[in-house]
Image (tube, rainbow, N blue to C red; front, side, top):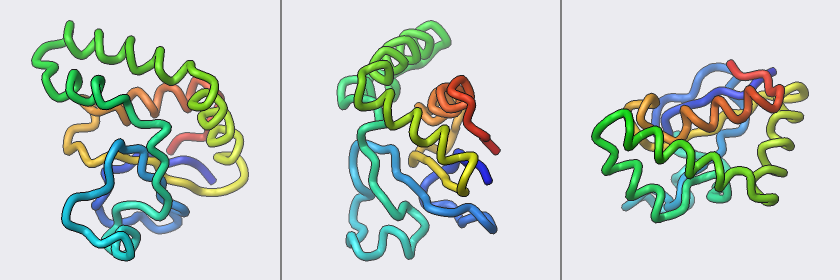
Length: 128
């Protein structure tokens, strides 16, 4: 049992469990009833996505300095009670069941899910 960090829309791994979409917006042009069938997500969890302003900042980050600024701001957002409690819950659940969290970005290294992976690990989650 663990949490996997995945790219939404990618094929599911065996035993992946429930897939959570930690994104600001649902996939474009995909009917809601097809989100799970098309390997996007089973449950939408936008509370763990960066704010709209931070999404724009992340997309515009062209160097390590800009990415570090995004990371600091995203971590600050995730310290807010609602997000912090969700992270704690996912970390605890990772010891009981298999889950996956993800985003659409192709490159995890320049995606909030890389920071999400760190945040979950710091809370003691079993991260695959």
